[in-house]
Amino acid sequence: MEQAQTAARLLHELLRQLAAGTEDDPVVDLPLAQLRVCAVLSAGPRSMSALSRELGVSLSAMTQLADRLERAQLVTRIAQGGDRRVRCLQLTERGEKMMRCHEEVRVRRISTALEYLQPNARKQVTAALQTMVQACVATKGQDKHPKKTSSLSPVSEALL
Image (cartoon, rainbow, N blue to C red; front, side):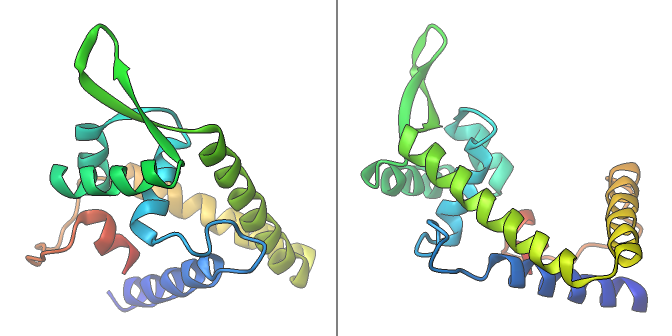
């Protein structure tokens, strides 16, 4: 359990360092909840209900987020299939460009940090991250410890 707590603290700090805004990052002023929506939409359009489930927010909260992102011209609502009542969100061209730029900034930051390390340490970091991802995938849903009740969404819990 001590190793898990240490790993959690280190992952949190790593994510915080990578997410720390810089002036060349176009999302520096975008609230985290809106950034999370845009990040999910980078993979393609999603229905409002699918987004709310994936992000662990209520449908009404998702609607408010969508409204703000639409006013900022980062997303647009589109009809899904033949049912005009079902609306999907998708990134606008402006939103796609913003997310591509954000990813480029993040990759540059990671690259700079990796260049600081010796070549062998870079390989170790990459291998350790791959191993951890594989372990998480393999053990998904096998939590051996009782969950604490929390008002936070699963995604928010993971970020903390």
